[in-house]
Image (cartoon, rainbow, N blue to C red; front, side, top):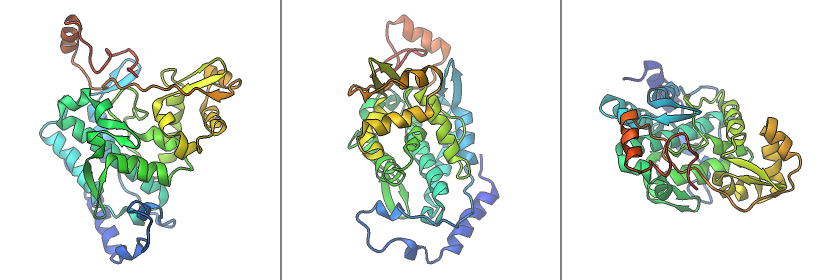
Length: 306
């Protein structure tokens, strides 16, 4: 599998057109991540993320109401394709893109890096809870410097918290574009993010995630949310219950909309579906079930563990 020539030409055009690229990076920044707090508003050239969609469609298997990922297919040329796409992203001068193109870039880079590393390490798929940790206390995989962008080595935690959550704090929907390789991951899509549609894509993902009772429940006048929302309550909602409630209400449909009309607080308890979303061949699943074991904290079709 190879990338199309127009993608190669796009990178070349950006690099040639930004020979003074370093001058566009702020001279004085609070830390290394503030360099990505700016964008070029009138830059209209798009980045083609078709390869990300190809990767997702190649790996995704329908499993009831959820999507599973067939990581076993990531060997040989398919894995080479994933690595090539990740390297393609690393070579893009993201600072000279417009803000929506930057958002799509960072989300796709985060997600393809997760896919690449879970594809390489089968045992890691069952240990995402430990390997991810939580914001501020990242686990081993999320702490490693896995990618390099504009000469800066970055971890998954850096991309998620120090770039996406920090620089798009005005748009809480950003967290619904994150893929962890678990059933509780907000992102379960089969299309990569594109700059021209990224906000619409995130809005749809937010609606799907929030209207799933595995992620949001209302009890006795309080709303209980997924851990990924609770973890980001401070940076995205200034730790304000009313702001978080308003956010959920803006996406709520049907039963959730009715329940949210009477909510007056946010429950401090939260949980996350850490069960792996790795696809298990039916014969293998039967063998695991027959031995009395479970896969990633829960069998397919059941809610993830907290």
